[in-house]
Length: 209
Picture 1: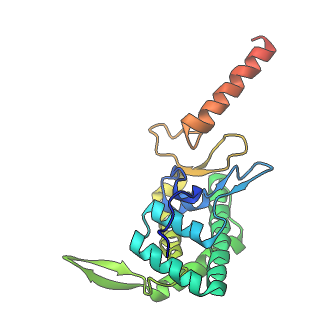
Picture 2: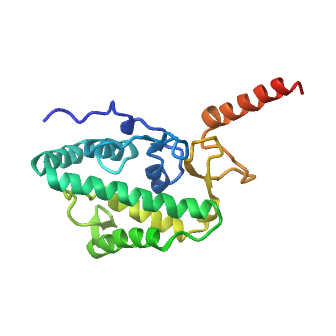
Picture 3: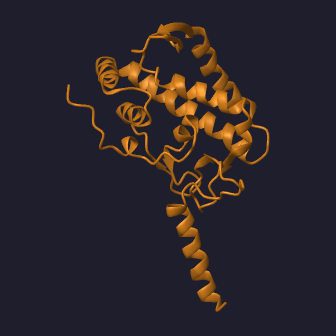
């Protein structure tokens, strides 16, 4: 098998969410525009992203890609579950950012993922400590388990009140506002922030103010 690529957009996307689950939902560029741009277009893209965020290492990525190549229908199902879970997690945290209750169907989808995760979870020794182990690390959907766990941890933590949606026109990325004033508006000041400043400047010039 060829070396797992790191050149895909999924393997180089900016990680601005402040939490794994938010970086996961941010794998759609310009989500709230009229032309959202999908970053995860295939199962290999999911593996690239998983390596990029540190969920898996190169060796495990190779095993998962080999498994996907030998079982196309299972890989397709795992990828479909990926997008389904991502959209559910997005809508849950979008509701949080908007200070409203999430739709029950979106919470239910997250809870189904957590139910599967919890049924597989166990305590395992790791050198001089103990860690959570989630069973078959070669399962093609195993990279989703840390994401689901991250969403559960964030939703039940004090930090959930810090979830924000970028105010850049059409961006729609979500992030944790850990700024001192808790008034952060942009996912990234260098990107959406600067574009907003430039747009305001241009509008002032047009109006003569």
